[in-house]
Amino acid sequence: MSNNRRDFIKKSSLAGLGLTGVNLLQTKNTEISSALYKRGRTQHTNMCGYAAPKIDTVRVGIIGLGQRGPGAVSRLSKIQGVEIKALCDIRPEKAERAKARLKGTKHNPDLYSGGSMEWKKVCERTDIDLIYICTPWDWHTPMCVYAMEHDKHAVTEVPAATTLEECWQLVETSERTKKHCMILENCCYDFFEMLTLNMIKKGFFGEVFHAEGAYIHDLLELNFKKDGYYDMWRLDENATRDGSLYPTHGLGPISWAMDINRGDQMDYLVSISTNDFTMRAHAEELAAEDPYYNTWASKNYRGNMNTTTIKTKKGKTLMVQHDVSSPRPYSRIHLVTGTKGIARKYPSPARIATGHEWKTEAEFKELEKEYTPELISTVGEMAKKIGGHGGMDFIMDWRLIDCLRNGISLDMDVYDAALWSAIAPLSEASLRNRSTSIDIPDFTAGSWKTNTPVDITLRGVGNTKVIE
View: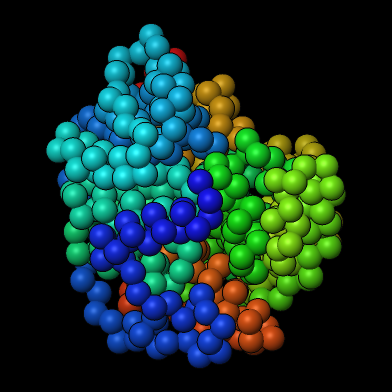
């Protein structure tokens, strides 16, 4: 499908959902509409800490079965109290292949494929409780909104939105429908991130005042592969936008560490990018051998490395980096700095320091014994066996289902989905204005001042079993 046709289909579907509108952050306008900040907004329902009625058996529809969806199908099939009712992908072979993963299980989902709007049928079903979205970025908000409007909880791969306008659509729809809208930020549930978060909550690092996160992952070859991302959608993102396009893997865990949306709030950011030194050159090399890449060789790509710095209302700072096109080892950095010590995950091995000395390996192991949270103690080893980025994907899915089955609030709410995703368009706006500071909206309407910090204990439940 050509990019023009894809854009036409998307815009047509958004019009049908009432989701079109002017978004000044995606133009070259140097002004940012105050309406997009919703100043003075009254909160309909505070979804932070909101507990929806419990669901004994969570009936799931999964949309998007390309890169991420098939893994979700397998993981969810191993969790008690889940019934996979529907699988959807525009490509029939992807839906069939995903269903084959369920052979020998109790799950026998209906398949939806072959058309760009088949996903709506999944959302419209009355026998589904949760829509699990693993599609390209442009579809995340339309699908979440449509799912919530049809009485479904919605969870989506990252980012949850690509514009400020979409961020507000998620917030307002979730509050009005009282349906959860969770971003599937798996990195929040990785083992070192969970360990350090528990240490922070127990005061080990003192008061955390600076943190760093990143998504540094060399995807240059994959982004240019014809059979990589469907219709080259991810390469197109890198060819049409410049900023911190994929911030949440680094940002989510450090936002939890600093009680963002729950005791502190982001105030403003500044973003700067290098020029592109690898993507266009790679496209030109490919075009010399294959005319298919001629169009891609004429693009002006985003800068290789983007660095975005954020100041909070309480005077603390966060730094987030994004680079998916340089030959560097993988890193999410994950550094937290407190008044009593620091932790840093990358480069490996992960390390913790108090004073001026890093803890020895033996000392680190003792800290692990003391501070590993109950959540990890309960499902961590099983998660490693089942997999999904070392187990963190399974921990995230298990936690989601356990919360829904027991009627308790989710760890990540719609305000996290909106705020973490908003960093991308806000960074774009900063770049277009010579890296000027850009205000960050408060999606919580001021409730961040009294919202309770993330609670990673099992909260008296954790009774959902794992099916081996």
